[in-house]
View (cartoon, rainbow, N blue to C red):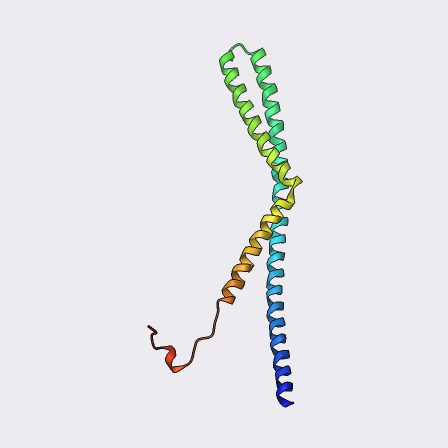
Length: 150
């Protein structure tokens, strides 16, 4: 009867140790997840000023176009070829700004993509750490442990 009691106590102790290890890993995982969420929120705060800057640049391009149109009509010193070159550069700038703006809009509309990639990164890190812990083993302290095996 004492053997069964000792066996039950040992099983309870082992279970409690496993629960403690699992709680430790969950604590570490929640800490990592909190850091990822904080970094994600910080990244979204960075995107907002960029969107504002893109809107400002778009307004500047529109003003540049109107100024170019006014200059080409008022000043005969500005040749048609120079006006076309400037207009081409303004068009290229406008296309680039539209590309940046569409990327920002897509990013703002689908923040779950950023969150999913962040969560995938966390899952990869956690699985790597758990794998490294699983590969740990106790050294064999028997006298034959240091002898090479053939």
